[in-house]
Length: 207
Image (tube, rainbow, N blue to C red; front, side, top):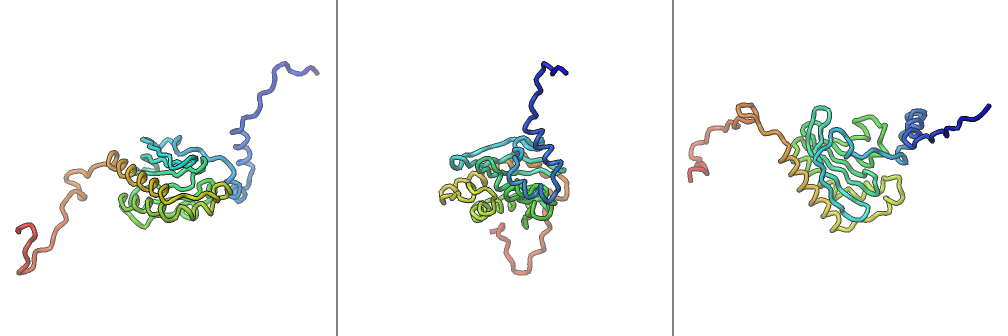
């Protein structure tokens, strides 16, 4: 039988990865996730208004506005050699959370290792929590990464402070640009009732 003169097209890399994921049992997918590529958060349909800063060669910080599952808020991704080592989603009450080493927790159910929920409920408090975690727990996050190249990385105090400063300023700016203002007449816009002054008390405003 004569062979077709048309050469067969090679199977694309993305198609091979899709087939591997489909054929791999779930527990093994979790173990292998650290070596499989993860799509950039920049390409997510819910991501907009991306700002970036280079902290050092191979390390960058993306801050952006995130809309997901009916919630909105500022978010950030710390990328090291292309790996998303830390992610912060400041989405307000009951929804603000962070991730560590995103490739390694793919496939883990939400609410366990995949998401670490913030105790802070308001967006501004969650932004401050993201700054605190970056400043104090970034070295710990590096030690958990499956890549030896990332585990060996060491940041100077100046580099960490540069990351924290950009993170705070950019996330607060995102919140100021995108957050919906309180609706006049709504419960959130009404003044909070104050108790009547005690006899003998002098109001600061009357001085």
